[in-house]
Amino acid sequence: MPVAAEVARALDAPLDVIVVRKLGVPFQPELGMGAIGQDGVRIINEDIVRTAHVSPNELAAVEARERAELERRGRRYRGGRARVPLEGRAVIVVDDGIATGSTARVACQVARAQGAVRVVLAVPVAPPGWTAVLVDEADELICLETPAGFAAIGQWYADFSQTSDEQVAACLRQAGDPAPAPGVHASPNADLQRAEEVEIQAGPVRLAGRLTMPEDPCGFVMFAHGSGSSRHSPRNRYVATVLNQTGLGTLLFDLLTVKEEVDRANVFDIELLARRLVDTAAWLRDLPEADGLGVGYFGAGTGAAAALRAAAEPDADVTAVVSRGGRPDLAGPRLAHVSAPTLLIVGGRDEVVLELNRQAQALLRCENRLAVVPDATHLFEEPGALETVAELAREWFIDHLAPLPQPSPGA
Image (cartoon, rainbow, N blue to C red; front, top):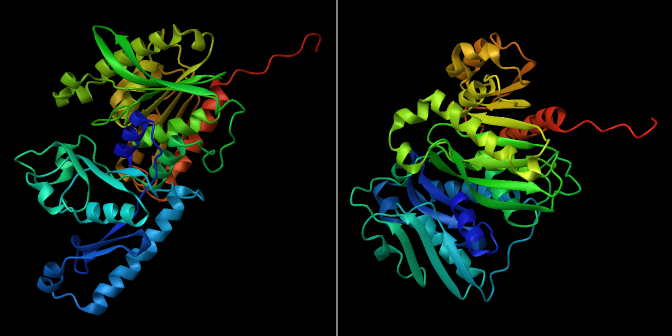
């Protein structure tokens, strides 16, 4: 979905989801013996079923379980919205990559079953010879890279972490005329916003970013991404969408250039990342739309350490900081110099990071709070966990960034 959202945005095309579920061998679920999709589409790999000695009853049980999950996810992702009608249309089916190709085959067949007259299957990466197993499923096959050393899709991504239900739903909301996320009260001007790709001069380099501005913003939030992530992070984009819906402008930007990312040491160079944040904040404040408004930092992972390190600078002029699953300990003794109100959000099951945040909180001298999301792990993939993070961040930034109402004359 995060890949498809970028394609839809570039083409100004409607975005929808085709839910497909792999049928895993009962004693080895990662091994697919088939796949199912909406509208009763079903593919079974008889060779794997026979080799793994899967009985008809076992196959039926797996399929029933996955069919129920397929329907649940379809409802969850769309949030009550109707499907985008495909009848008589050309459809681009986007996947994050091709391994066995079974789920991509099912997705193409679902598109056909819903009336698509032309199906294009587009993926970023696939093994050499991938078209042989899919040539009959789509009218056109597109792939950017077919590396000889292909072993798994994830090896070709800098960030291949699990995409949560909340992130998928956020992509769909952002692509259409989004309703506010659960529990979020939209700003009256939330739908009157513009988003644009920008280039930021930060010291000697230029950084790519995405700036979203409501018509009358009440403040701006800059996102500092964690190691191996970028401005395309689906988790941070989801949080940004929630903030936009309440009237806050957001800037998601890459802390490193493509060339710098090759050296993994740069990802953990907190001093370098903090300088980039300070330079980018200065760039943001020079915009007419940001004149006189508060600026906050939202950091994740190592990005949270960079945000706190930057906030400790004497001339930082940062109004608030939020850390999501962050490593504030990497900011070291500079934590004691942070003056901006700071919210630390950690998953209750992220035990190591939770303890590091407790230790870091003891060093903070500013207004601060540690919010623990029950039963959440480091990436907040559990149902409702990321929504909780977004709501906590929204409340913190609104409380500390939104300007106080001015008394009327004579009051």
